[in-house]
Structure formats: C-alpha cells, structure tokens
Amino acid sequence: MVVAGWLATMLLVAAGMQAARRWALADLGTAGARQHWQEYKRAVTAQGRRPPKSDEPPTLILLRDRFAGVLASTLVLATSLYAFLALVLLGMWRGADRQRAR
Image (cartoon, rainbow, N blue to C red):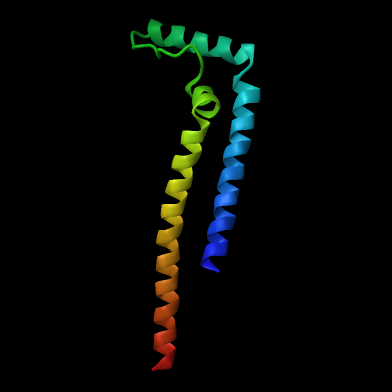
C-alpha cells in the first residue's frame, strides 16, 4: 500500500511538473513575455539595483533548458517527504494497534 501510494504521488508530481513546463513554454516563451522581462530589467536598473543577467525569465530557462534536473530534484524531495510521512503514519498506526492489544 505504501509503494502504491508513493507511485501515485510521484506520478502526480511528474504530471504537475509537465503541466508547469507546458505553461512556461506557452506563456513565458512569447515575445510579449520577453518584452515584459526587458522592461523589468530596465526598472531594476533604474532603481539602482543590480539587474538580472539573463535575457529571458528564469522560470522559462529552468523549465525549458534544465527540466530534467528540476524534475529529478523535485522527485527526490517529494520522495523524502513521502517517506517521512509514511514512517510517521505507520508508527502511529502500529502504536494504536499495540494500545488495543493490551
């Protein structure tokens, strides 16, 4: 049951990441989004702060060019969180079973 829950969770996480990637490519990959990013860089420079070096939004770069690494690290983090939660819940259930057995 724990393994089936883990597989379902990882599939949902991967599907969510794929949806985020599709959104980023469709929304942030447009000429209007690039123009908005350039305006943001100019506004940051006008405020006296250091402007971003990238000519494209960082979200677009991450989800377009570095998607495999982002997906892998997200799955590792989700696995860690799932394992912790599964251990806690199994411990609670086993403790409750021991209390009933007394």
